[in-house]
Length: 419
Length: 165
Image (cartoon, rainbow over all chains, first blue to last red):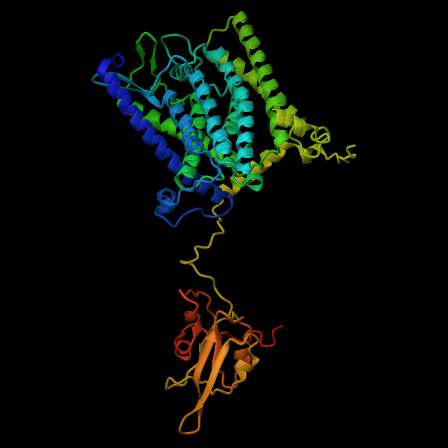
């Protein structure tokens, strides 16, 4: 069965855009109630439970409230940018979803429909490019509000996002070294087992690229401006930072943007490191569409549904980890944040890339073909690296309170500003 | 010239971020999974109030429905915030009764002196706390309203422990 072409392709794409956007917005709604429920449970409360069953309709009540509230416009605000900022906050997180494969391809009578909105050849380079745009919403919202708290929040946000962007992009380089391809569906296929076609690694990349997963996840936390990296918001110092002056639906859009970003990062981690829509321990769902249009495996509609479920479960678990971290860890100090980004993550990721590159060179020199053993050797190397990493972090002074060198007479603060 | 900052070196087990973070994560996960939630579903599930709780007033009545008050004037005298307004009157048989008896519950500090001083055990504080009104005037309870109240009256002493020990 060949992939769809022509008019059917256009129709299928429009359908997917509408469907995935609605699913994302629904997921954002559920994520807000999920976060409040989980945080309540963690604090031995029961969370929202008055509106609807288990408080599920609370999101609708909140949405209605936000729609009906007064839209304020501060006198100092720069109107066009003030209005544009929430849009820029919500936009990158939603359009990132275009390159994420949700499920195995769906066979229809017109051909095979891949469950991805846009299978662009530049794949996750698009992710990195669009992810960087997120900083405009924060910076613009902070500046256009005409409030010093907002401005400080916006500045902090842009400095932080630019800093961690570097580590985020670099942490994906080992993935390219391994797959040799940047297309998201191809990365998912590389993590599955096939009897025919080009060689794959037969295991989720969380094993052969364990340390890479850690770096990507930490940078992702920083990119989404969530605790322990929520310095742009920092209620205690900056009220709520860049969205202090926003009210009603404009504020709500920033929140939707934040949650959409969380879901997007969770989905990206799923695709890159947790096998995407792959169902573990079952080879029946392994379906691969090669670039010349040949299809390996047997796509059926129920497999599409099952793999969609697997993708949803993995992404939800990652969102749970995000929420779990948020309600546990306290916020970093600003100099710690910058130190972690520039003095630790950047170096560590660079060294990691070099090590992985040399190991891959070594494995190929020894002559192990791409596959399970190849991944296993890399996994052992990663275990060793993870041991070294955590040993170093445990003894590191960067994020250690009260240690010598953590705060040498205020010199760090100036350095942090420069970052 | 910057001053010398004394830096206290703490043992690694105390100051390690990684270990502290792992410990914190395990604590929050334990609480997330624990079924023992502390929330009280308040309007559905109410507090059990102590018998000596002092809340809004209630007037005791005779069997025929008349208020027990003899308008002796002790309660407005003893009231530290002057929230009781009493105008006495006498009926044909020479019995004193309160022509006007009003308590401003908004001003009341619920000290309970009126109940303690009352010689005929007419005015009582009540075991009751859920009060809400749309206007301040509604907070002034007149005699009729005080008689209508149905909640338990405050006990002056705990029957199990009369000497309060």
